[in-house]
Image (cartoon, rainbow, N blue to C red):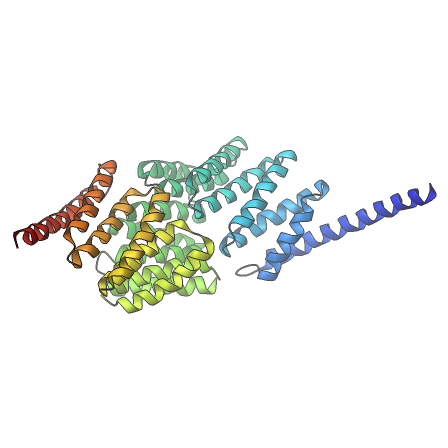
Length: 407
């Protein structure tokens, strides 16, 4: 019996030592996260995953554990962590609810919503961001509620629900009282909406406004995202040199802040400018660099984009089989995303591949499919543009087909 009692004491002592060790580890990592610039090093991120696994089992350590979670969350997102970090956030939300920690719950829901948006799971992103906004409304925290609404607006923009996105931004701005950093995100979303609607000059204005506001709080990462958007807005205005400069500056900024995903998106945008200048090989070099990152993060949205642009580049070079394969990969991603406007654009590119090879029957089938899918989004921005473009290409296919029949 004495042995059993001694074992119990030993076990209790060991548990106490272990809990103290975990709490000290959490505090050490928190200190390193607070001082990390521009991003928490990989070694510390790896140690954070390991430590949180045990810290989640210690309810008494929740105050310091929750602080670590909220401090490292932006670093994990910036470094490109997705599925593994999402799992930790899910566990943390369950714990924060058990601890009746509403403020932390609201912030964790926001962070998880952002990650689901980055994984192109827009319904899940909406669910978490709406919960976050409601949580902060109940807590009477207008700034945090505005943050959740802004990110919800960005999801709406990605789903091409443009009026909803604008309404959400307007609600956020009414809560912010000119708070520079979050107001900047509002204008960034308005710039993204204008880009998708094809209002290039309007997008440029909003993005420059956001860039200026983020400059006031020295947020280089978000300034980089504005420069990336400016590259996309300047290109269709045929301001190619300015577009290249904006895109290259964005790449440099993301290199400096160690953000591989945004750097890859910027490289893709610079590649798009080279493509417009018919410098296909320069474009392809950048596209392949970006594609590797998008595969690593399994980013469906940008995998769809990059394969579309790869199709365009290979079509420009007359490498038809490679172009067709890229367009078909893009279509597979587009179907998963449900973005019909982009899907129609990609179908049109695929049809042009067949048309250029003297296969008008196959081309016409593709163009007619594009027109049927386009009819599902009648009234959306740029519908008329896509209708005119695809109709013209379909007519070219018919003419080529008729000439072949006549011969």
